[in-house]
Length: 176
Image (cartoon, rainbow, N blue to C red):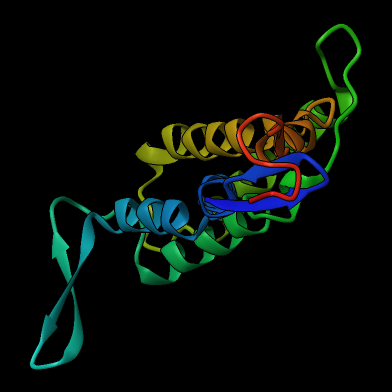
């Protein structure tokens, strides 16, 4: 915790805690990596061996797409789920945002088209089509719903707000 004293007022902020909290809200790489691992039917295991970082892919099931498809879907998601897009603002009318709904429809359509067009190149099984498109759309919706009425920025303001307390009586007039 850092403390700043100024003319009888103590500013108390928790920059590290606030920064970590905001970082969790904005960092999307791990989330998208987990989706990619799921598409590939496993997970990446990282270990240190003889001072070197070693990554291994542990297969836990059947892949939904191959590495090319997983990489492409990862890029599609990264264009929508990232620290920059969450800075946007969808204005709502009666708790509904036409722009937000249109954006979700376009995402769903473009992902569906990409899966159909690249079905053979990505080794995609069509029986997973509906589940995959709706799962990815739901992830985008949950992430970007924070943009509705700009509530994410309001929330950031609350996170970083400093707390002021009067220190008269706790210290002498000269701050001793």
